[in-house]
Length: 189
Image 1: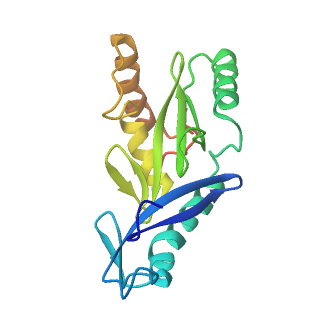
Image 2: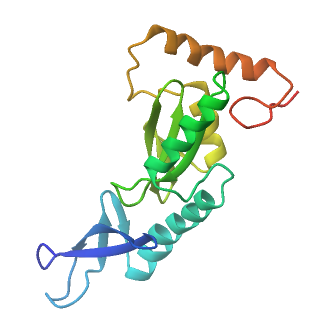
């Protein structure tokens, strides 16, 4: 794509959505051959087959985990936000969240939630897992558990002190209650 020492891997992350991954080739026999060393960022692969097995296949597995998760909605982000608003109107004290595809960035999901107005976090899909808040998670439930402890993450600044108080109260209420939390998961008694 850029020059003779660079490949572009096109990953079909979901139907109609392709993420282009740049692969740097090193140790080439000639300009027409594929390099004996393939690099994606700091990861090194010895062949296209190894790259597919160690890079693409794990991300495909994480996509399957995402789309099969109980909180995943195969809807547009604005439709998910509307659903969150409707749920909030019907149950004002509730805190609701869903996962959906990020429409702007291929290879990313969107964690959408509402306190007073809909908000979101980008969730990256990597060969190591789901990337949120500069941490990789091997499963969505672990990510969502951390999200419930700190819904704002490190990237969002909520200016309203009332919303900050509500965020801290949510974690303590869910931890002390033996009934289903407002987040939709059952707490262990």
